[in-house]
Image (tube, rainbow, N blue to C red; front, side):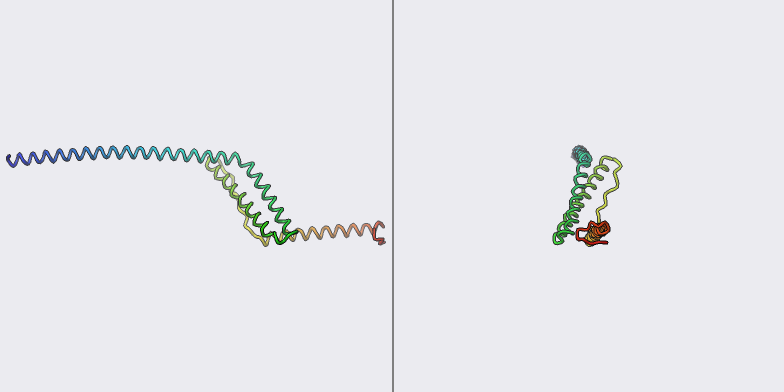
Length: 178
């Protein structure tokens, strides 16, 4: 073989090898593109499922909201009454009653935030988010004691006026006269 023929043979072999490599690269690119398309389709399907699940959750939350809100408002009222009663009648238990009140208010707050989130998920104009009251045990107790003190003063004043009226009317059971 002449050197030119050898060079041509080598060139043909190199060209054939390059064409094989190009075909393999094209095949690998096609496989990669197909895999990427499957991954994109799977991601889109997953996103659709997640959006459907979010929407189902939001619809269920919005549907249950009136009952949950009413039940929690009643629970907050009951917890507040228990706390106020504990301050007046059993001061040793008012701390636990206050913590129960705070827990009930926190649950009410969390439920309100869930409702707002559900409305936003559904694309509705959501109401203003609820505001969690700042815990202030001393102020709460002071308010209750002050309110109860005024009640006691009013009751004592009413009794005194009734006694004075009985004395004026001459119907005082103690026999006092005016």
